[in-house]
Length: 308
Image (cartoon, rainbow, N blue to C red):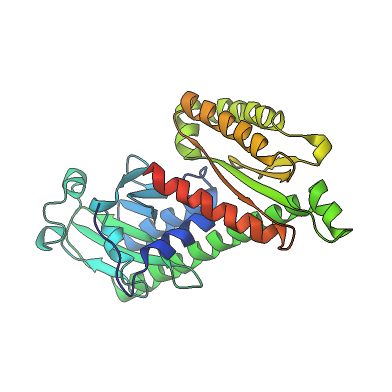
């Protein structure tokens, strides 16, 4: 894999910022479909995409005029765009640019023109782009460039608003755990937080159908619930509209419960076209449950690194 790191381009932190959005592989959403429709219409191009640059792939949150849901990262023009987060990358003729002249994906598409504006978090991490592609060499007008920049800002606003909604739901799940409620009345209760996340929900929905996927998720919920010790105060909840489950376990024999959850995850990964990954972290009762959750989330990111 290409080395994407540099002093000004901290790939590990950029990837963590993308993981924290929990958007890669998510189900289609009309708002993003509207973004690419407007981008294509304003720029007068047959193709437009909202891309996210994951570990070794470029994944499309939304697309128009393009087949497939992802490409290898090494052939993604957007991977070049995110290296200059504050600038729109415009390539008037891809055939005349040494970086892209032999690109097999672009050649297969017949792509000759590209313009993409990076999606940048408030912390400055470039996680993807809003881009347009044409089949003939050309250039954008200044008004079109400004429109593409505006659409990128709007897309990032949508992504971060979506992320905040998830964070609020996660906080509610943690706060409503019997173990956390008990901790408020005492000096603190040690607990283990577990995150299980089914990867590439959008691909699964395309392959299995949304109703079949939902049935699988409901069955997973039951199987995971059966691993818990309710008498100890264990709980598990699924984040709305996702393949993400969050469990809070008591400290007594938590390792055995964690092993049972991992066994369910392994079984699901063997049956389904995409894996169910697990990240966990144990707390001592001296830190907040949300802090333990963030460590579990980091562990989940590490599991994703291992998958690629």
